[in-house]
Image 1: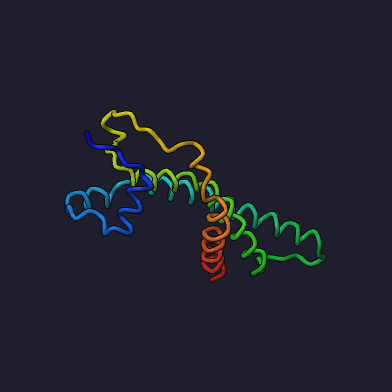
Image 2 (image 1 turned 120 degrees about the vertical axis):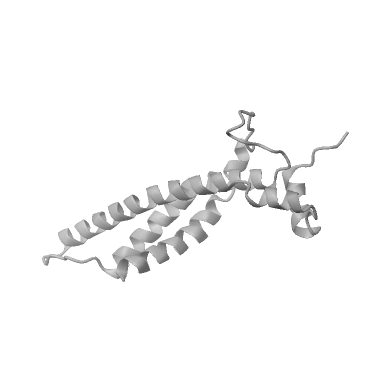
Length: 152
């Protein structure tokens, strides 16, 4: 009887032991989790841009109330702060989807939403991993890119 290895052992084997030499196995794993990745991107973009515009408008409204002159354009600090905050919040919101995708990407079991087979997810405690990484790395990076795009 073949013993089922944990996904962390499978990940270590793929990273440090040269991985599988079976071409069909590598091709099958190449597209595993693509649907979850697409879902993550859709959720991130649907939440980031409205939240970014909301924060930017709130900051501009506050700047207008604080000064006697009417500002018609946003400043670079307003745009940067709004985009970085929105990027951090939205990155934390999609962090469980990234963990879920990585769990299935490196798991040895085959699964499909369309075949009707029961799909078991990662343990609940695992979904809370990586929130700080997403908030402190991915959020500001996407925020700076969005701010540069908005300012040009």
